[in-house]
Every structure is written in structure tokens, then in C-alpha cells.
Image (cartoon, rainbow, N blue to C red; front, top):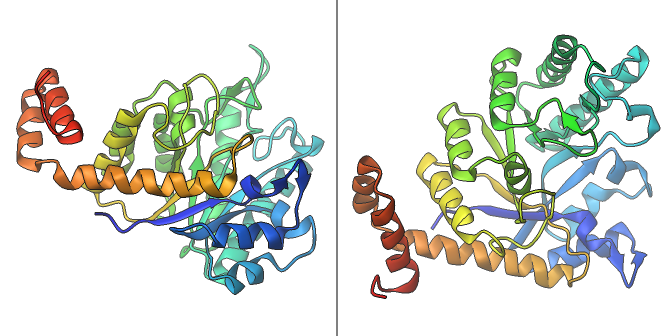
Length: 319
């Protein structure tokens, strides 16, 4: 079984009976979830909203902070962060991301994730696509170059809030990695975003792993068209099982972050269920005969692959 560290989303624990609760209470609730040993924080929002020493609060209850997730909120960034047509707004976005990288280096946090939601376009003829790409790559390079020991990754998503995101797929992300040209710049895979993009999770994970660029994994589940943020393995268990198999095969051993939205369920129970589901999938993979699977893959035999998984999961391949 792989020795993943499990982290979860602070904002999932911020609401109680419809009211926002203090950050400290949310962090204590996270620390009480069996199997959760880390949290990932939004920057700058979680560091400025209430003035709490959020890193100290996490440390006090034994939670590691495994990544800072950039969020570019507010009307200033409605037309873009690193691709904003207003130079001062663009520079402010890059400066904010750079501050996050500097803080991460200072506090021993080895990963900063850039979710570039505002960067994209909405209408035909609205944007110079080549110019947008150059601005995005320049921003990525500036941020990643600040602290070579801090990994910086882009978390792609095909749309939302922009109708078309600039970095919308694994291929886009890996092209960006090649253009940035820095060893510490990679990709974070979010399962719902992968499904929104019409991608096969295990296949795109293999692409990133092959290039040494899979820096982060955000797990959740959904029906595909939207960012549903549902419990792990609740809708597409076979996709999840194969993704975990590919991560194991490729030697990914980092943090699994549960980026879920438990809006109508208890967040602690939901997070515990996510941990338990990953462990169940991992036990299935422990039983999967590697030689037989390799033979099936070499033959590209879909029937044999399906029967193998049925046998391993259900205990028999008999009808």
C-alpha cells in the first residue's frame, strides 16, 4: 500500500449550521478526522481575512501544511491575473504569487499551486491568444524562479469562471512546463477538472509522470460537466482505481488533497469516508497481479482487463 499523506480543504469545514466558524475551530475539526494529517491553504485569503496565525494554529494541532493554493479574487482580476490587460493588475497578481512562494520557502512549505481561473477569454475575437500565452508563461517563470527549492504547479481547468480557460488541459499544462523550462515548475491534477476537460484520469496522470511533472493530486468525484467536488469514488470508482494504479506505477508518493464540497453532508464524516475509500482502493491494488495486468495491456485486451478487475474487486469472474 502506498504511503500517501492525506490533506483536506479548510473551506469545507468553515460552515456550521449555515454560519462561518472561526479558522481555529475549523482546523481543530480537521485534525480530529482519522487519517487526515495535513491541510492546504488558500493564499492570500486564509492569511488576511481574520488575522489569525493560521500556520501556528495548524501546527498546534499537528497538521502539516503541504501546499499554498493561489486564488485571485475580486473585481481587479476579473479580466485576468497573469494575463490581465492592465499592467498594474498583472504585476499585482505576479507579486501576490511571488509572495506566496517566498512565504512557502520561509515556512518550509514545499509546494505552491497556481489556479489561474481568471486567465482566459469569453468571446471570439476578444483576445490575442499568442499574447495571452506569452504573458502566462512569463508570469509562471517569474514566480517559479524566485525559490528553486519550492515546487510551483499549475492546476488546470477547462472553464469557470472564464468560458474558456487559457490552461484548460493536461496537454496545455505540459506545454506550459516545457515553455517555462524550470525543473521546479509542474502540474497539479484535479480529478473533477480532468473530467470536465473530457480526459481519462489515468492517461493524463501517466503523461505528467512520464515527464516528472506530476507535483500535486486533488481528488474528488463528479458527473463530468461541472466541478462537482463529490466524495472520492462515489460516481466513477473505476476511473479512481485506475488513476491510483497509475500513480502507484509511476512512483507518485506525495500528498493526496481532498478538494471536495460537502455542502449538504457532515464535512468530517465526508473527509473520513474519502480516506477510507482510498485505503480500500489501495488494498484492491495490492491484490492486482502485476504480471497478468502487464500481459493484458501488451495485448490491449479490453475483455480480459475488465474480467481481471471484476475478479480482483468482486472475488470471482463467474456470472
